[in-house]
Amino acid sequence: MKLLDTTLKNKVLQSMMTIIDKKRDDIIAENKKDLEAFNRDDQALYDRLVVNQAKVDGMIQAIKEVKDQDDPVGNTISERILDSGLKIVNKTDPFGTIMIIYESRPDVTIEAAVLAFKANNKILLKGGKEANNSNKILESCWHEALEENGLDKNWIRLMHMNREETQEFLRNPSEKLDLIVPRGGERLIEFVKTHAKCAVLISGRGNNFLYVSKQADWEKAKKVIINAKTDKISGCNALDKVLIDENIADFDNKVKDLHQTLENHKVKTVIDENLKNQLSDVEVATDENIWFEEFLAMKILLAKVSDLDEAISIINKYSGGHSSVIMTEDNDEAMAFMQQIDSAAVYQNASSRFTDGGQMGVGAELAISTDKLHHRGPLGLKQLVTNKYYVWGDGHIRQ
Image 1 (cartoon, rainbow, N blue to C red):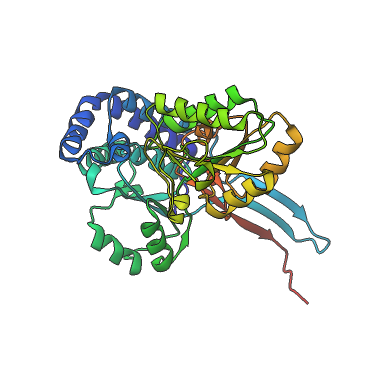
Image 2: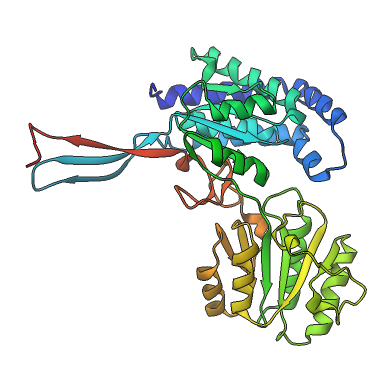
């Protein structure tokens, strides 16, 4: 794959910013077609689908932030000269062709493409059918920006395929793929992992947990819980489960207080059977599968635990490995929790809603990876490269 000059890549991104700004009303009009055709029963998906003036501003800002970042390609990771005289340099290198499969969010068509392109990768975008009109006009904007700067529009392509055609493409790709990033439900992720002929990087589900230690500041804990649950229910970094230490002072009244606070914010509460004495009129979760569920709704599960170790065990068993929070004023306890929890992001006394490329200082993100190879957490520009070893010799042979 041809390596593009940084200046040329940035010119394409500057063109794209200008084109989106100029066509913002057309983009919103196309998005309106998608919104009118969408079944609003799934409020989380609907929220992700919406493109308004603020969303267009956000798209332009995302491109600007990536444009202003250093080029991640060709940077030296390590360099050494061996005793034999061989010079070995390890440098960052593009993946090649990336395919991303995602639902609903048209802004992914901007963020995924700008990151892949700046990192010198071609990208195949497979958006959901519910965002078809929005994605098509955004693709046309990309193609205009590329061709305006003398580049082939195949650097950024929307895959105009239905579900069955996409599945067949994964089984028998018509072109070389180097990385696939599925952003969707577990069925999609499992299908891609089973059939992909290349590396797969999982952007996993949320199902995030928060543990309220006996050493928590209660008012601080309530504030964090409400923000993590209600700020954006469609976000993969939203809160789903709260574990409360039974040894916290005034346990019964604190549980009731939290339930009332959640009700005041129109959050439906479900409890485990160990909280029946405190919340006798609240629905009890009887199916273990609810512990694995990412709600994406104004719904939360409250449960009682005996100590830190039980909280850690429950979280590592059921969570999606995305974000986990401990509320405690004991820094040693927080560190024990954070070291033992198997999640991409771990927090002390802060909302899980910060697991986001922009909020974490990464900038625009391709996804939030819950994989451990090659990266975990927000996939920003610096994470969309692999590496290559450059070796210089002078007739060296291995003996």
